[in-house]
Image (cartoon, rainbow, N blue to C red; front, side, top):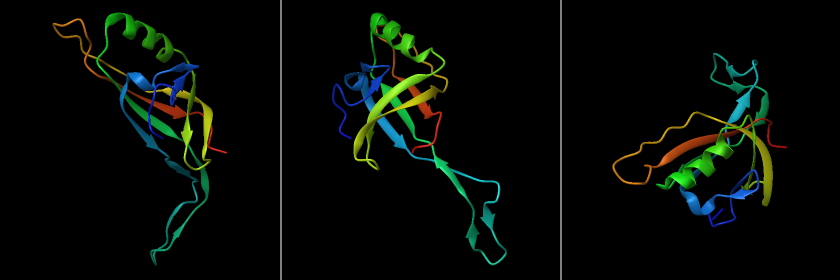
Length: 123
């Protein structure tokens, strides 16, 4: 899971060298039958695990930003990363959350943060 230039790809474009941080989340989606009984016992049906990667990008120049937003501003992305559960590099379809960045008095943006959320459960 060490981030290098090729460890994370968006639509086939390596972005590892552009990142300062990537948080790997594996949230569980539970069914409607999930909860605790009055005795405190937990019961429920696990519907799936939907990986979510939260990426923080380094400050970048305008040309780099323009290239990046073309990858982000699509309906879906193909995200490639190393999955420790599968012990392999996998590609999943994702959608993205909102993102924002700040331009200050230099020719660089501030950091840009965005989440990539799986559209299907991890198989």
